[in-house]
Image 1: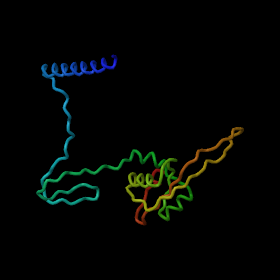
Image 2: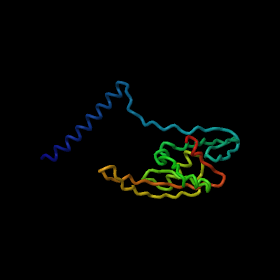
Image 3: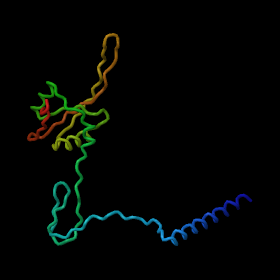
Image 4: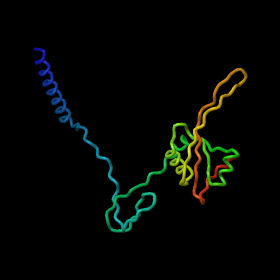
Length: 168
């Protein structure tokens, strides 16, 4: 008979909930209603033309939703590009329009390309990544190993330039 008691309890619980709702309505408290997200503003002007960053320029008398372009996220770009590499070989590569950076070990070419574009406002033509193993070192009696790391060599268009040596 315990199975039948379970069904009775559910019916009683439903009745209790209905009574509570009725009491709230009597007191003047309304139940929570779904809040709709705000809609994009509608603007009336002349014809529209698309700008490069995804914004709309309005020129006609039509109703058009305004699109807002997202700013490049530079917070992650600083996590991807750790530091520019300033060595003899790296300075020689600058004459070929190639710049080298130390990057985080888990990053790939696509992430590096986005980070360069976000930080320096330059579109890379090519990205090469090199994984460098840490050297074995000894300090007195203690022997160990340096960390493994990655190096990215970014090739730019002939007219583009990155100011890496400003603070050096």
